[in-house]
Image (cartoon, helix red, strand yellow):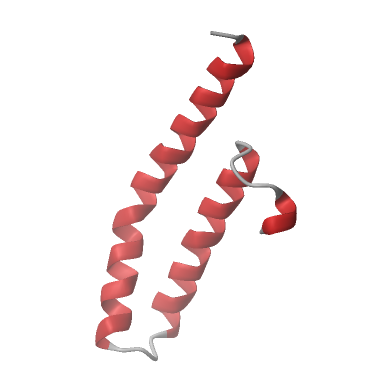
Length: 68
């Protein structure tokens, strides 16, 4: 396995770890929004979580910045 492949695997692992950490918070925000669609705090939290995941994906090369 090339060094680049090892790095890519490690970076993708980082993305998956980040996603797992954010999953619980995202689930909670979605539950809040299901109860109260006008909950701005839950909406902002969910938006921020997706922004972090998108940025992490870009940083590990899973998505180009022009598609974000």
